[in-house]
Length: 261
Image 1 (cartoon, rainbow, N blue to C red):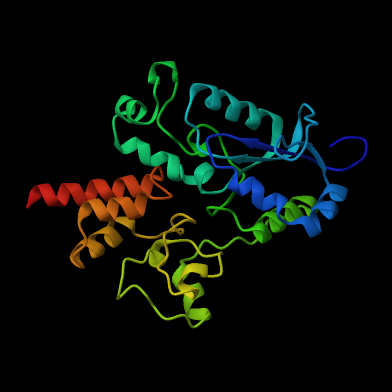
Image 2 (spheres, one colour):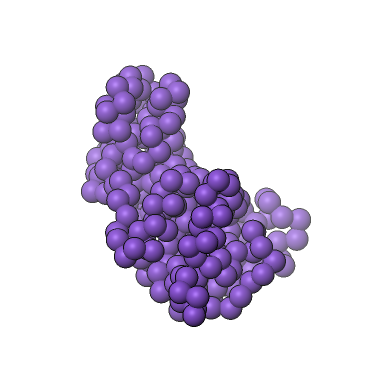
């Protein structure tokens, strides 16, 4: 915190689409209030001015996919008093982590014309390398949760971010349950989005990652009993959270049970 008394805020970008940063910029009506309450010291997507650390609050968007990003996220941890995962890529590996299911060189050869110039590693969430103080879920994040976290940090209060299943949110909104008709990830996905997809008649795709305490292996087994193939289950569970430990364990358990038959 500088002499002005305002906490210093930083936003880092790793391997991501920048959609979560864009959500921050989309709260135009409140951005000036945020800028008045905190000093936005480092946010390359929003400003050319990039002041050096230390910072009071740091947000990291994106999965870690290269040795350079490993060093950047470790530097961010050293520079920031509070470090927050910004979105599902930073929290669970997100979409980039789907490449981990294939041989690294094979993926690179399929995507890039000159893969020999790449220096990449398996996509991992930020917490694989450093300690986090909080996580903002979603692909992209919900702007209101970002504002809630910033306000909480300013007054020294822990923000109330939901960790329970999306099914509870659906029931409270009296949405029709889609799980009986299609592959819906609501039972194992964290709430907080307002059940947006089910509200529109679309099954939950799990973009907010696994809810706290859910039995992912049991859920994967249930989907298999409903007739879904293991590849489809793996694609759905891993779409936004392929690097989450529980997802990998669930798929390993499913594969082990199939091999025993």
